[in-house]
Length: 174
Image (tube, helix red, strand yellow):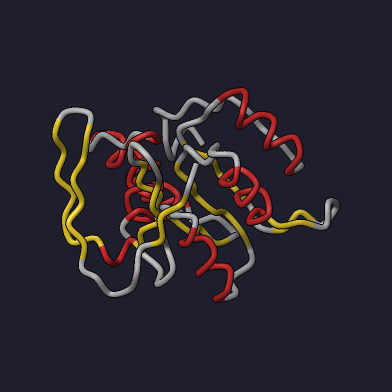
C-alpha cells in the first residue's frame, strides 16, 4: 500500500461486515476499501452500506476492490457513490488512480456533512404527486400539496404561501 499511496494511513481493518460497521462508526474514516461478497455472513457490502445509510453513517468515500465484475455490482457500487471499482487481481496503477480521486475530493473540500446536505436537498426538491406539508395557522393547520405551492415568502418568523389552486385545501383542527 505504501508504494501506491504513501500518504494513506490505515486506521482499521476488518474481515466481517459486522466488525466493519463497528469500526466505521468508531473511527469515522475518510475512505474505505471494500470487497463485495462476505459469504460467511451471507451478506454483501451493499447490505452494510444500506445499514449505514439508514443511520446517516455513510460519511466516507468508497473504493471497491473485488473479483466480482458483474454489471449489477458496478451499478450498485455507483449508487453508493463509489469513487472507483478496482478489479482483482489488483492493478497498482488503478489503485493509485483511485487514491488520486480521493485526494481530489479532499482537496476540493469533500465534506461528509456537505455531501449529506446535498442528498437532503435533492430529496426535498423531488416532489411526488401526493407529497404534502402542514402549514400551521393561529386557529388551524392546513395540509397543502407541495406541487400547489408557487412561492413562499419569509417575513421574520412568518411565511406567506402563494398557491396554484389545483385541488382544495382542507383545514385541520388542532
